[in-house]
Image (cartoon, rainbow, N blue to C red; front, side, top):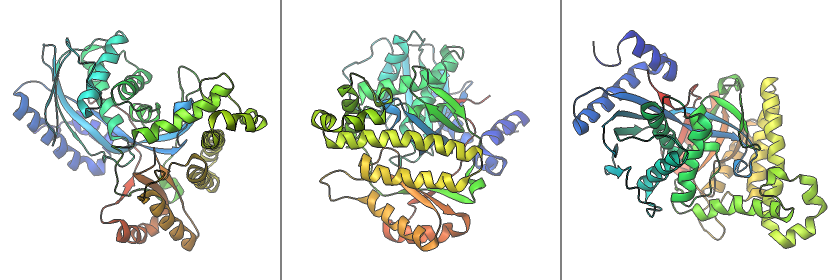
Length: 417
């Protein structure tokens, strides 16, 4: 019997990926095991997995302690790993240069250098929080599409957290801590002011509603699948990545927080919409017009998350899709994260315009910007029987393989056992 063919292994892979994908995933993990052996030699190996995520509602709200509706997806990052008994961490991500980090000599000056900086930041944060970090070897490969708004970086971060937790902390690191470790690394070592949405979605798994208002985010599992809608959820990649857009992303939370500062608060979750409206002229003078518009988007998006969760529970999918459309309009007009100001590149707005024309022609569906915005992806809800037609029309303009159908994965980041 080969690897991943025992009754227990088949059961684990089937529960995570579905029986219909069993053969594909068996081959994928076999490849992972073979590459680990080639790089690090014989011996016992453990396997880990963490999914990507899709944001359903709550565009740019988490960083101001707001509400989101999100889901893990059936695209994941996987690792073969084992402890090596030293202070060194060796990480090989397939297709990239190998990384070695000495846990006893972390380079705190190593900023904005991709995966190396991210790993140093995560290890530093874990140690500061009192967790144990020991040397390990890991070979990693991923199906999470980079620069496509499905959080390839957060998937990687949660995978590393799962490895640290299993090898050195007896499972004592909870999912909120996973997310904060990833966020710390992005803040301090990528200089990117991200919220906790991406990490929480990848860590917890399934469809979840999260309220970030309190120090300990409130997480509610929501039973939902796109098949219930009779729609496919499609991520449309517009072809431009996010590598040079950290300043644009950071402007969103910073400007929202500027509005809160007018009232002596830190984030918009501590302020009400009515307060802003009642003091609109003074707030505009203090924070600027775009800051005010972004704050108004925050308040409206909070209500939409609540409305959408209620609609899902009541199987009122017309209202749910209406929330998606309203969120998209608000992101475009109020939040203003569908293109970079002054840039001639407007892939997001072009993709949205084409999708809206298709939806208007067919009389059904919804679309919105997906994730951080400015460049990257949009999401489109398209009836099952119209998928092929939609893909043909969009890809004739944007290029082949730009449309990806997403399905929800039931579990987050963990060790396969």
